[in-house]
Image (cartoon, rainbow, N blue to C red; front, side, top):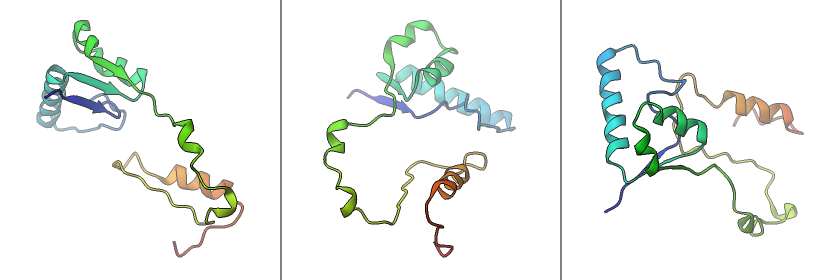
Length: 123
């Protein structure tokens, strides 16, 4: 069965990766290489991540890589309810993971700064 490995960001090369334990770093490097070596296709979310991660590996491995930029399907936008039917409450769903250095505070501050009404302090 074909295996597609999806890198939503660099693994070892992440700007958020700061593990000082050399053993863990070596294990993670080995695991990343194993994934890159054995996956039938390696998908990244942008060209910069692809170039950064793959720069450590033989150029022949690039034939199994591609990037699919985050985007939207314009046809799906047609299915969105008109503004009069949308509730005023904003819901944000995050399905990834956050770390100490990668947190939602800047997004929440931007929403607060640009909102027309002050957010409910109880939420």
